[in-house]
Length: 208
Image (cartoon, rainbow, N blue to C red; front, side):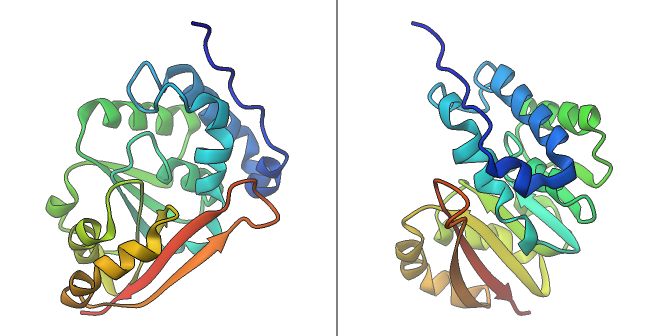
């Protein structure tokens, strides 16, 4: 079976990354070349790598500030993409799996990202606090909130990149949200008019 072609770079990429587009291209090319082999992305993702994964993450870049933890960073989606787009923000990529840590470390070194720290750990064991905690495609809110809310400073933000079922996830997580003092919950749809696939973002604050 022939390999699926890698998606051509959409015109929105240069707009979203600005003068960081060369780094975004290098990261995307590396992920296209090695991602499936190293178990980072599935075999059907190459024809939508930019649209579904890279730009889906990058569109949220303006939302972040200060210190950010990316929980379950995996292939670097969204953490590495966001670190490329926002070099003035401090990023901590939290990932428990050794082979993914190896990938993240290689990419940070190759791309010269001095605003990124990598931690091999489960979120529950990190023991640090951040201005913002993010995650993408990790788990449903009712299981994600208990492991991420404790990482947020008082009045810190949770910003999760979610799918079309985010409203149902919020409804199912009401008890968990209350238990972990998560409030000011909202959903933003990003990328309308810019991306062919919009990004849904769950946002909330954690109060101690």
